[in-house]
Amino acid sequence: MPSGVGYPRVSIDDRARPRITMINYVLLVSRQGKCKVRLAKWYSTMSPKVKTKIVKDVTQLVLARRTRMCNFLEYKDTKVVYRRYASLFFVCGISSGDNELVTLEIIHRYVEVLDRYFGNVCELDLIFNFQKAYAILDELIIAGELQESSKKSVLRVVAQSDSIEETENSEDSLARLGSRSG
Image 1: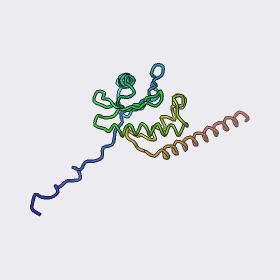
Image 2 (image 1 turned 90 degrees about the vertical axis):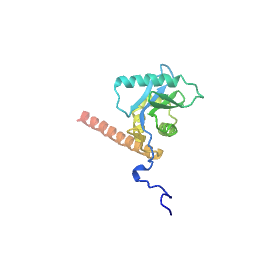
Image 3 (image 1 turned 135 degrees about the vertical axis):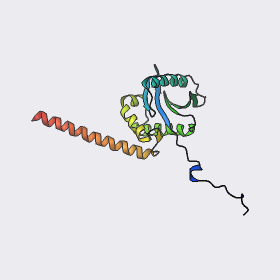
Image 4 (image 1 turned 45 degrees about the vertical axis):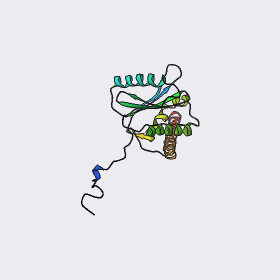
């Protein structure tokens, strides 16, 4: 083979590495009433003032959009990806170079796990069991990156947590009953 012909030399450092979508925040916003935020999880460090501004701006942007419009939009130097389920908007803020479709899939995966856990999840489930909504989200996403894509694995871990919690609660109840009778 003559010199200069063939495949170029490529070092390991030059190869394209798969890019993992980095989520900066997840918001669940209710469309009913005064557009309340039902869940807010932040994966990037920001001051409370900046967070409040983002929530206000993003909520206004998302709620102003019509049903048939695209589910992503640009906000400052980031992208906002959202999806509506009934009266709730699931909103994620991602870096401008990240994949919007992957983020839509992450949102959908979260809703599927919530549906399986609560049995057709509704806004009231998230209001009265917000700690479980956060726990499920924490099983799916760590540090802004999808860590567990298996619905079964997430549900198994949450069920184990529920079981431990029930055991501790029943032990506490028995201990309180024992101290009253003694």
